Length: 623
Image (cartoon, rainbow, N blue to C red; front, side, top):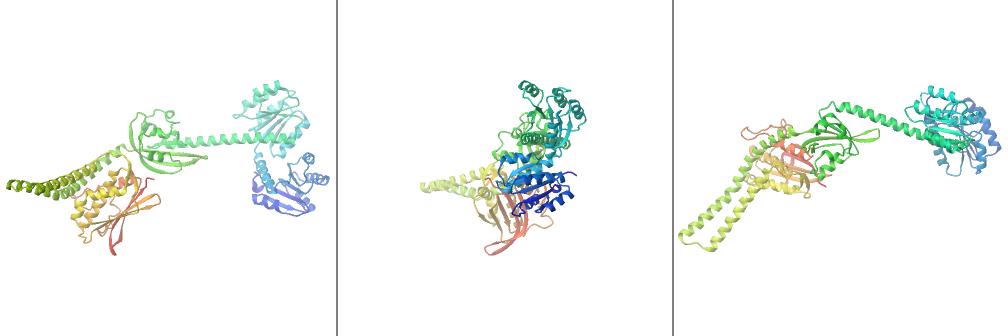
């Protein structure tokens, strides 16, 4: 049966004045199969009837009586013995260790600390059952001493008394952890054994030499040829155990590293097979350094081989002009997210992409995998839709401008005609003339500002940047003020604060314009008496929640889920394209990493209740 904590059997003998279950209770809490005795006769009967892995002999003193009891236990059971005593005398410790005890511990420190050390030792013993050590030693007494020590530590042992026996054991052994080699073999040069070991195994197996005499020249020659360490004979038990344990720990670590690398390589091979079957570019990063990429990504970024991309920082595939915000998002290693971002090919061509980032744990390494979709063709089509939407908006904007210009143009015309008439009649008053000219200049400046606002609205390819929410809403209301006023619509605004957003301010303005214009059209179409548009903004965690609520009696249930689809419109074909809310959705979700939702619900204003559509925009704040 493979040993584990759960089937590791321990028996405790308490040969103390004060009875205690402290050792038993703590070892049970670690998960071991334990039994506890204060009576020596019951203890002896139990260990003679059961196969045990360990016996803990807990005593107040270490005298000839305890030595005699240990020898008696060893006659009954093959279990390892750990002797715990309160007696402080190192000479006695050496005497007891010669009884082939697994360990001898003096209860000077907290007993819980000692039990923790025993727990660690047991775990090591369980692991040692998987390690095989070849011992090649001609001297019988030393060989038996080594065999006893290794058995106490639960190692698997292969014994050879000559070089030729060791040679055959290396041929037969499927796996070896370590070789303990006599440097003074009668039948073979020890260097031949070291050389054979190096040739027989794919990984390095430590070879520890045993020697009676210290010969620096011979030792140096052996080390140069692959010798790992040296132990002098006669062997000191504690020194021997310490060296062997240290080497075995080192071997385990290297083995785990090899297994880890093999698993990682297997995972990478699996990733490559899957990745090369996709049409999207897939790139794998470890700590933002490229470690693998699929064929599609090489084609996408115009690299000829993986070697040209592997080892590069993630920022290599994005232009230097990319905003600091987008760079920070890209560098994050603990968040799964997706967003649009510009990237750069090896030849310098910048192109738009949609990326999905997933962070996964592969063999205890945090790996980031980015899926990249080239949006060049999609953006081209999207721009066409955008232009159609712009043209539709331009028609409404021209109507707004016409409304806004009629009154100022009429006033300018009247003022100019008055000045001319007074001049012809010879009654022109200079002060009155200057006042009317000032009025003409003021109204002309208003017309010029209206043109500038209209031009800014039509500007293309504006950069992403920070902008204020309130200023954007004011710009929208200014652009459509004439139509809003003409239709007798009341705008109600409420803001917790003036929030800062990040994106393309002009596109955000168009998004709001589409929503508010739809609300206006719905109220006019439905002949709503009390026409109200309520705009509110508040902070919700790291986002701003902007709601635009109208009193137009809501969107019919059978179409409310379709309003963000392209070309869907409830207007007559001569009145709308159906692109307004579709473009709004694209701008809010894809361009600003936000969300947009719509529901029909009631709201209150000045103690009166109204019903209509509520558009909710959830946008990330620029912190």
